[in-house]
Length: 478
Image (cartoon, rainbow, N blue to C red; front, side, top):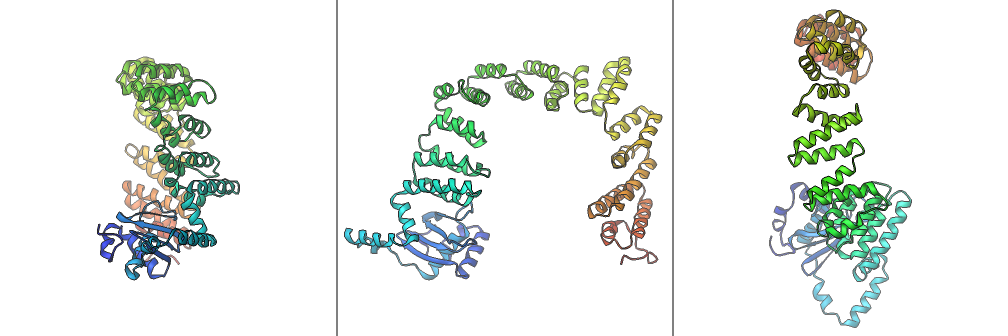
């Protein structure tokens, strides 16, 4: 862009998102720019936002700068308002005036300015940023004890680039005490910390106290460059399970695949451990070994629903009867039922009753009975089905028994309309639209019957409107 600070709106407007530009211009027109001054190529000032305290803004060449507002991007609307104020009023450049001061005059001026509380804060941050930052961390901890602290955390995040490792570590430690999710602030602080020769031991201790994804990735990023030191830290002590998971991931990142697999095998205790091992083996193309451990997990953990990815793997790669049986026990479905019927032959009928007893979904049972043309069982199912199962049962019956499906849709729509809520009316209309695929006239007839039954329920009329025919003899809703 052109020389900074800008001389005209055209010098900065093309580089700002349209919405931000519009809102920044509105802020300028509303007189929200409280202060504005220039120091060389930088514009500084205060802009009144939605909070009682004005936001402090600094804009430099390339539209690089910062604002104390919570907006995550830059430039924000406050920075744009400052730019408009400058091109309209041309803020005086303080740099030449400051350079003309003698050392004695400069010290005297600073002492006078320090007596003003709002200016004193600027000076403290500028002259002793580390000390001011640590004081800010103390205030942050106090705010956490009172249940707040987000505003203080945002302010400290904007000042991270002005402090060193000690201060960033203090901020990271404090964030773990936050009464809210500190993850967004941790990510910002860790980005700064990783540029300051970070301590692996601190990152590990923070992670063991607060196992967040940001801390995990930060530790592994540094550990990838200091592998032996990291592996030594990950031996024994507290947080053994977390350490073992970190150690395993680190070994893979270091290219020590066999050691990583050995670590995974040593830690096989729960379903999650088997999932990690099998996933890693599949990624390495070691399919047979992965299937062996998937089978072992199946035999150990039986009907645990977390096994489904492993059972899907066994079915996809082997498809043995025991694989289909195990998956059906965890999640009854038509595919496994038919696969067992095909692969077991006559043996299947010895298991059929036991398999059907595991099915709790009436719609799935209906599909099975339809395929097998077990009409007696289907009739019993329909007579005993609870009303909440009617829509799913109707969908299952649409192709083979459309009249029965229509009956279920009609009854389900009537029951929904009787509930008397907007959500229930919407459900009734949806059911009748599905009925209309089978019987358009019947669906319209039911819609009018419901509308006449509840003439004062305007919400019901509104939901049923697509189904109501134009008939001058029908009553209109009041």
